[in-house]
Figure 1 (cartoon, rainbow, N blue to C red):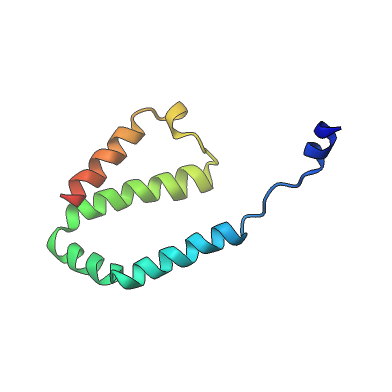
Figure 2: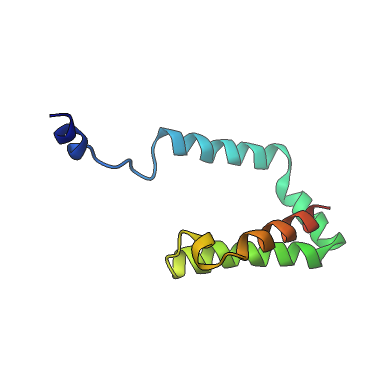
Length: 93
């Protein structure tokens, strides 16, 4: 009987209270810390490393996940996670 109840459950929608909270929280943090102004100043000071880390992020998010439909990067591209981590650390320093 419990398996029948579990099968009848619908998957969560993409926009629910939990996801709406995190979206609003990210907007508030972006506004509070003046994120866009900081990125603009960083681009003027050190644009090469920021461009590299942004390119890796765009490659992962837009191309691999949305265009190719790959959700598990570790399986198909095992070197991608260390490269991504290294570029973001280098851009942060």
